[in-house]
Length: 304
Image 1 (spheres, rainbow, N blue to C red):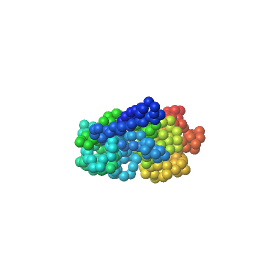
Image 2 (spheres, helix red, strand yellow):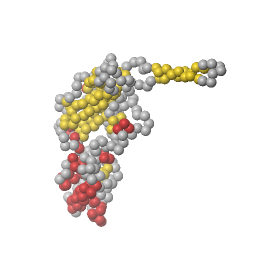
Image 3 (tube, rainbow, N blue to C red):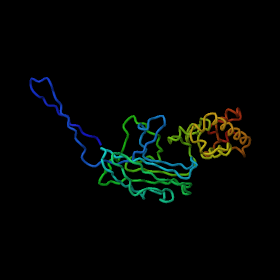
Image 4 (spheres, rainbow, N blue to C red):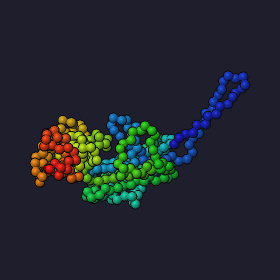
């Protein structure tokens, strides 16, 4: 919380050339505030400059592990205290479809911010489940006020200049810092790097809705599965650009392009993407020459 400073200046005497200023520090009266301080950002930016993230999403379709351990930072505003401070959180059942004991485990009844500290971590585990194949599951956690803490940050916003990660519009509606939403799904999505951003993942192309450029073109789950099948790779191979450097991605694009060009020799065997257009990687144009095609080419236009 902000501390208020009262500055009063008193003239000491008519003939005095000195002016003294009295500064009185007004201590904050009331409880400290508790809030989720979850941040995410690019690895080349200092973590202290990362923007707050009001949700966490786990895409099991982009990882090989069946269990993911999460750690959510909870922060207390105000001054440090010389004693432990406890707090609790609840699962908002009205906004939760994930099942405790099946989709997630490990939440505690009580957490402690230790003496001399301003934060702690809420740790628990999310488990891959069959339900995630059919739907996106949600878990909503709510901090609870008590004798130590109030909840005041109902519409939290970062100060100007803070780096903010790209939000998923479907997930980012909440800005109450006492609430953190989590979303779990098991569908293939565009690979992300360790910082959670697609730009640092090993997919050399764009997400759905992009212009179709890049070695792999626009992402689709169908294309991703075909690429892994043709090149004997797994989701882990696309984790980031250290395991999928440009030369390796180029070789993969060429292998996939050769297959797509072969299949496009006949209208009956041409490979279509999820949107009904001919599946595209950049080397379709490079290797195919006059037999190649551009992104978003419809088969009826290609086989005229």
